[in-house]
Amino acid sequence: AAFDAVAAIYTYSETGGDIGVGDYVRRIRVLPVTSGYFDVVRVQPRLGRGFQPEEENGERFVVLSDRLWRERFGGDRAAPGQSLTMNGRPYTVVGVMPSGFEDPLAGPVDAWVPLDLGPARDPDNAENHYLSVVARLRPGTPIARAQGELDRLNATLATRYPDANDALARLDPLKEDVVGSADRALGLMLGAVALVLVLVCVNIANLLLV
Image (cartoon, rainbow, N blue to C red; front, side, top):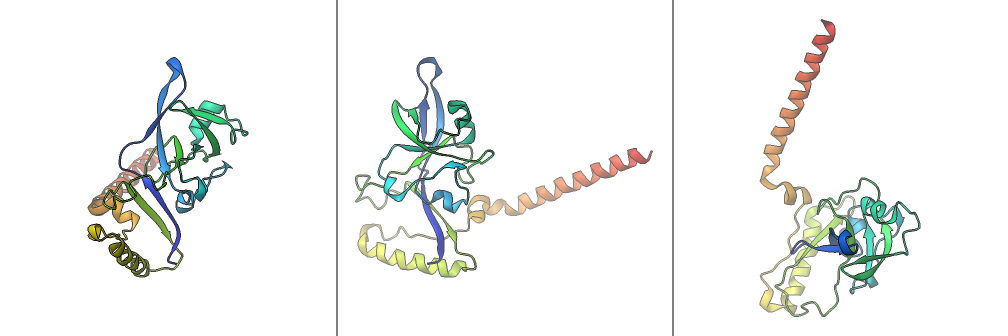
């Protein structure tokens, strides 16, 4: 296989959850992901674990960000296995992410939950594109080979879902997908920042000499 890890995330709309009770209820940002997500981003929980494939069926488990862990559990290292009430329902904490970790695909996230891939979720609607799929190539694997695997998958899906055979999977490098046509502009801005930094250093050096 060309891929080292593959995962899906729910990006159709902003997902959140309410935690706390009474006057202390507040909204947090939640990202539903499949079990391979932390393998794709190559960051594992510092406490506990991530999700298992068998938990992708609506199981109420949660991985906390470092800041939410400190807020709700006071930095207790025994938090994995304890319960967090979210949207009025108990979730079992299974992991805590490292301090300073910010989700590279979704930005600031307070908690991650297992993505529900149960068959009851639109099983016959192949055109309902509510998921984003991310993958990490195996070291040394050319993109052309990975695209070849996707092309074979496309052919299989086109046979299975003929009404949606125009919905083809295409491999896009993450940098191009995120940066796009702004790559050159960002490079120019970085160069300008570096130039300003050099000028500041020169000016400070001149002041020290004076």
